[in-house]
Length: 327
Image 1: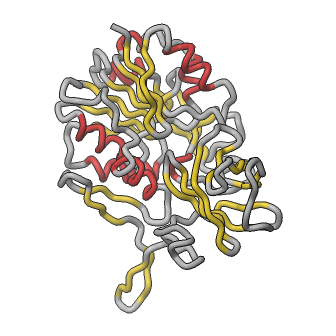
Image 2: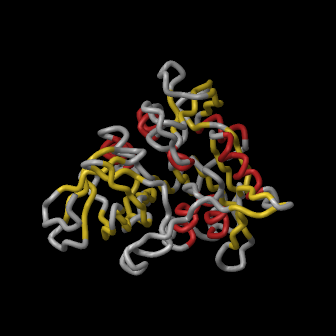
């Protein structure tokens, strides 16, 4: 496999979330995702392809036959700077009583002397931490002291909730996350922050029960940030989780209105915005949403169609679209 490509050429890639091509731009050091156009810088070294996405940071791919496959590695520095090799964030280990044991989680200090948060090494927790606290993925003008109620749908391990709570220091924040392992870290991260209410459930257009999918149909394990919710008869779910609608969530926690609604639910936004939004959307002042067109074609158009009559769309931040209610 060649180490250099000409503008317009395609690099075949297999990711845990998608399979497709990366198209080399006119600048041979740059490329774009063929499915949704996300851009990146890239370098190749040996059998490794280092892709530094503009929106959410770097990933490493390993050559297997005629394609590059996601290695699940986090590079500390570009391949060129490392003299042709990539130093990944692998599992951390410690010596205890003469035995090497793997570290499940580490505590990282939050910027601005705002306490600390647990992250799990060698998982998607690290790039999520980077994206939120260093790349500014949620650094949007809709956040501030005038926010009273913030709802975080798809809170993962609570890093987004911690950031939103920092930016909205007077707000009550309801953090909703369905995956058991993620929720355990979320609960630990917010246990000493009484303004953040953790809720172990999946947001859905209706109340009831659905299932959590944590692996692809092929059996490939998903990273924690990519877990999805699916109908119980899909054959893809691993265990049942509570499904809760936004109106029920608002009633349960006494939310008369929502100042900021953050949505990152890995494709379930299609079901959410296909359902009855009349009970909650008029009570929502701003929406911060990551859409997943790659999971469900038509998602971007659906979300725009529902929100644009009532909201003005601001400039995006990272993978997030920002909507503010019209005056």
